[in-house]
Length: 346
Image (cartoon, rainbow, N blue to C red; front, side, top):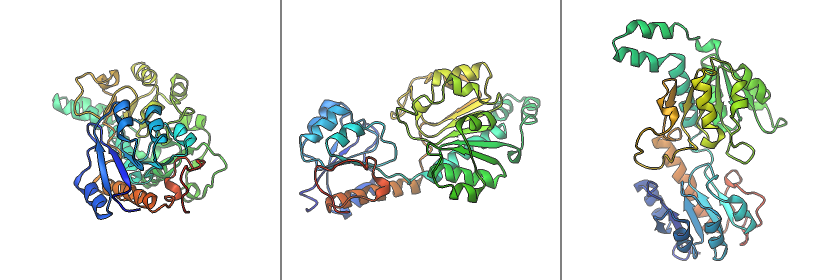
C-alpha cells in the first residue's frame, strides 16, 4: 500500500500541532497525513471515518470516536506517547482495532524529574528561596537544619517499570535505600537485585518511605489509589511525588493531608482536576497551588529535546509497520489480546 492509499488522520487538539521534526519524518516515509484540529467527539468521528490509522498525542478518543473507526477501514490507533487512558481501548479491542504507543521515550526524563523534586524537598530549596526573597536568612537556615541527608532517606516506588528502574538507579547513586512494589509479585527481580532495590508490598512502601513516587498506569484498579487511607499510612515527614497519571491521586484527600500536616509535601506533575493542555488557566488552578509545601509542574516530566525526537521516531516507525501490514513491536502493543479486523504479519 502506498503512502497516498494509506490515510493517517492526525488529531491535533489545541496544543498538539505536528512540529517540524514530525512533519519531516512523516514526509521522509511517504505518509499522507490529514490533520483534525477538533476536540468535539462528533467532529472527530466525522473526520476519521475513512482513516486507516488515527495518530494522536493527547486528544480524547471516547466510544463515539472508536465506533466511527469501526464503521470504516481503520486498523489501528497510534498513540504518540505512553498513556492510553484517554482512549477507549476496551471498545477498540471489541472492534478489532489495534492500539499501539511509544512506551519508553521518556523514562530517563521522568526519573530526572522525580529526582529533581526529591532534591527540591530534601535541600529545602523552596522555603529557602522564599526566605531569601524576604531577607529572612535565619528562617532559611532553620528549615534546612531539619532535613536528612539523602543517604539516610528511603525512596519508595509504586510500580517498577522502566521509569521506576531509572529512578532507582539515580536514587541509589545518592546512597538512598530504595523500596518498590509492583502488581505482579512473581515478575523477574533481576533488575531490582542488581540495583539493590528491596521488592515489597504497598503498605511497606507507604509506611517506610521518606519519598513515595508513583510509576503505574491509570486503570480502574489504580484510580485514586492514593486516597485518605493510603496517605494515612505514610510518615508525617514523607513527600508524595506523582509524575505518572493525575487520577492515581485523590487530590482532595492529598490537600487535606497536607493541610493537616499528616505528610510533609507533594510534587505533582500530572493532574486529574485541571486540564493542563491549554496555554493559560486563571488562578487559582487548584487548592494545592496555594500550599507552600507543594511543587507543581504542568505534565512536563516527559519533556526534553531527545525525548521528543525519540517519541516521534517510535511513532512513525509504528505507522511504517502498520502501512506495511506488519504488527508493530510487541512492547508498543497496548491491547495484545485484540483480534485484528485486518490481518497483520508478525
